[in-house]
Image (cartoon, rainbow, N blue to C red):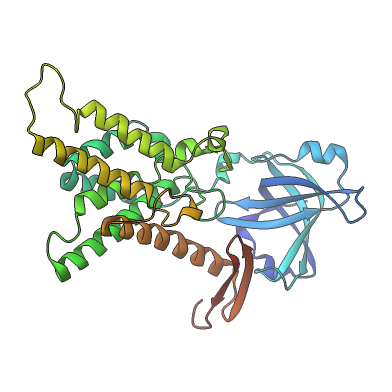
Length: 344
């Protein structure tokens, strides 16, 4: 039997037929069928950026034990029309076995990571000699390799390996454009651009602690730490530690005395950066302990949301035919996406 990689076949061309595909298993879970006795396996078939939901009904214990996240398999898959799916079809697995294909060939990494890194590098001259940059850059640098390979979320947005860096660079670019626009409109000092860019650079940094990411499969799960803390709580701690290392807002014995004005200036800089980071989710119910009270915090919140939402639309469009709609239930209610007929 000849198997074809999932990414090399268009399943829509095989409706009401059977295909033989090779894929990586992701998001594997075992559930009970309607009889509450027989088990079935739900999983995603993955090949880089191609991800297809599938089911294997009547699963035996030996099959349940065999199918694991991050492993590569060959399978016979029936493709059936299914209107409730955004793709228009469902996939049912009938026969499955191990494949000898290397897992690293199936892992989905973000593109253009070097360009995303350059966005951050090109920003450094504008912030590094400010209090905000002196705090933010060492925080980022201390775990750069992990930050540059991590995912940004489990399923909401920027879920591929390296997309924490992609999302961060997008937010920084959006923030920069918005800052320039409003400074031109209302005056050069309306938006404190070094503050905004420094906050954007580390706003999601502590997702490296909030999530555990398997770099061999791309699977992302909440860490044990995420039960006790969040990336917002952790980055505020990081800022306080770095500010203390720099002695900002402090008068230390044996050092040249600081004026009260300098002490106040340093402390305000720390407070402003902390506020932007604390408020970047925008709402208390979204995990921010405070709502934005300064324009920089609001622009960071808006930029963060724009990056996430455009990613979701792009992801939905890949699974939608022109002129079709996809609806999914979220914590905020139904989220509807329509792909207009002019889009390919």
